Amino acid sequence: MTTEGRKISIEKNILQIKENIGNALKKSGREGDEVQLIAVTKTVDINRINEAIEAGITSIGENRTNEIEEKYNLIGSKVDFHMIGHLQTNKVKNIIGKTKLIHSLDRISLAKELDKRSKRNNIVTDVLLQVNVAEEESKFGLKVDEVLYFIEDILELTNIRVRGLMTIAPYTEDRSYLRNVFRSLYKLSEDIKTRNYEGLSMDYLSMGMSNDYEIAIEEGSNMVRVGSSIFGKRNY
Ligand SMILES: *Cc1c(COP(=O)(O)O)cnc(C)c1O
Figure 1 (tube, rainbow, N blue to C red):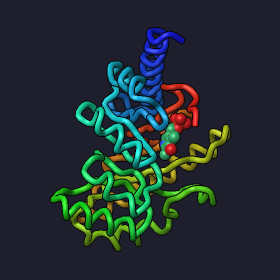
Figure 2: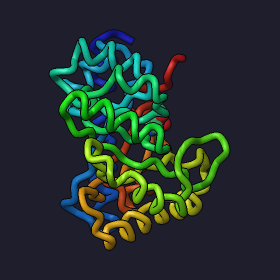
Figure 3: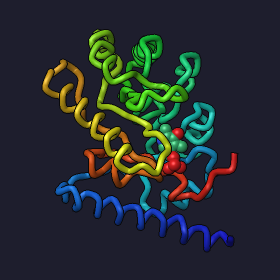
């Protein structure tokens, strides 16, 4: 495809997704609510990311720290970075201060490292707790019944701030199963809200990807992470 043709299709895809988001909100009686669209740019080169930015994207999601580092140096002033993938404790120092939000806090050792590095940099790092709602072996994340204990364990860490929850749903065409997964995470976030933990908020519910973002929105998501529906299939 020519540069111009590709550009038009990235823009067209983004417009289509925004329209679908609006329709999903309408369908679930949430008209007027905001859903943040995070363009997932893992493996996507800078030119194509810039085309997405020109088409109105303000947040991008990456799952590897080295890609965040590289891209931050090139476009860090233009766009917010979201770390959405598994984060190794020894890589925290490379991205601290570069992210708007880390979606994948899933263990105490990582919470402590994020807190320590944030303290050294005089910043507070915003994070989401990753929950493995479907308890898939292949995925990271806390189990639903571990989340409250986890929160109580990390409340003393004042240089990280929990802003909500994230989940990756199983890859399936079973729409009602997906709906149940998203509904469980929504319920959990509502339960946490009622507990009024100091310094913690449930502002964000990060759920929904190319395959399932409309269902996720119908079940309460306000942050979707969409890659292939914007940029096409990834080449690893
Ligand atoms: C890759 C990825 C996405 C985007 O997946 P698509 O199916 O391409 O939309 C979303 N969230 C996470 C955590 C990812 O790793």
